[in-house]
Image (cartoon, rainbow, N blue to C red; front, top):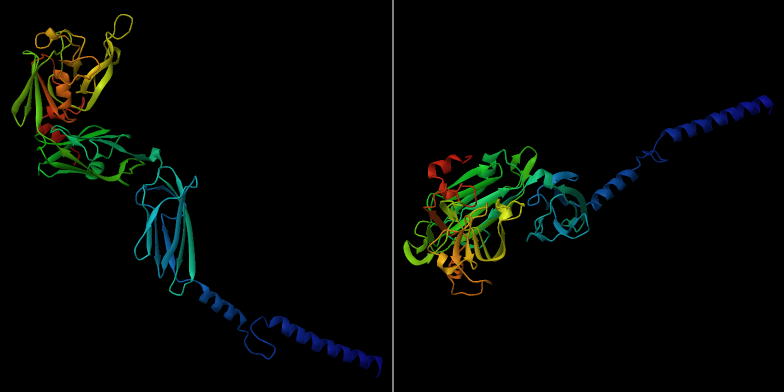
Amino acid sequence: MTDSMRRRGLTAASALLGGVLVLTACSGGGADASGGKDTSQAKVDEAAAKKSSEAQITITPKDGSNNASINNSAAVTVRKGTLTTVTMTSQDGKTVDGRLSADKTSWKPSVQLERSTTYRLAAEAKDSDGRIAHENASFTTVSPANSFIGTFTPDNGATVGVGMPVSINFDKAITNKAAVQKGITVSSTSGQEIACHWFNANRMDCRPEEYWKEGSTVTLKLALDGVQGASGVYGVQQKTVTFHIGRNQVSYVDAQTKQMKITQDGKVVKTIPISAGSPENKTYEGQMVVSEKFKETRMNGATVGFTDDDGKGEYDIKDVPHAMRLTNSGTFIHGNYWGAPSVFGNVNTSHGCVGLQDKKGANDPSTPAAWFYNHTLIGDVVVVQNTGDKTVSPDNGLNGWNMDWAQWKAGSAV
């Protein structure tokens, strides 16, 4: 064989080999050496599908949410499966208690969440074949700056007098009063019509036209969660409160006769001598509701504008017995142990309060002040008459009864 023939043979062999290599390189993974289709990838995909759980877990609110509700936001549900494990933790690592539904398809927290807190939820579920699915999410609840709360009185379960209104004080100014008022309902077993009145952007009181019927039960429902009270400010409260109305007791203080008549169901049950405000410091007139009771308390004139030339209080009594608040501005009906017994029923000597004879220490139940204190409920009405002073402002304490029904209803936002 000549050299030229040898070179032609090598070239042909190289071309053939090159053709095989090119064919092999361009055939991809879809064919085997015999020319048939390669099913290895399809088998991998099929196997992966068979291993995936059909259970579909949903966590609300969505992962990364802000301004979430502290009442209704957190929830875990599953379709095509049942929940096996749900864990919810706060940003400090504390576990949040929750309830799993009987059919194991939903879970919710069993406690109210905290504001301005980040929570993490981790859920696990299995389908009918026992295959496991997982889902995780985190969210942050509404901040105090973006939410409002109403502090209400009276307390849940309380027994109060017939003059006790529902009074709600909001920690943010409410500009969308109608929406907030619609989220608050007050009802009574007495069937009395109840209307609400806004005194300002932060306070709303609710009452019937006449005093509550004795023995009735009043229900306050707050459905404020998510209600926009002002621009960027939302409610977070969702609760029901009930309180009970006790016996019908109304007391009448007459500054001219210097006597107080205590009535129950319209009948006088006791008359107590009193000493009201002096001519220089007259007691407000009007219907006043007892809003607080203290067996003993301190009273300093400086806190209510009674000061001497040195700026000190004209009086500072650290142990005033049997004190019952009638106004926010400092009017009380209380025991007086420092005045002579002859004062009561004869002379008006106080700085505006109504004084009853008492003894130091508030431990003698036989004194007139002790009797009245022990027979008085928060919410009882004290009507003060014939002092010569102006009628107390309806928003000075729980004293909306000094506004007629038409005026009261005119202050409603709905």
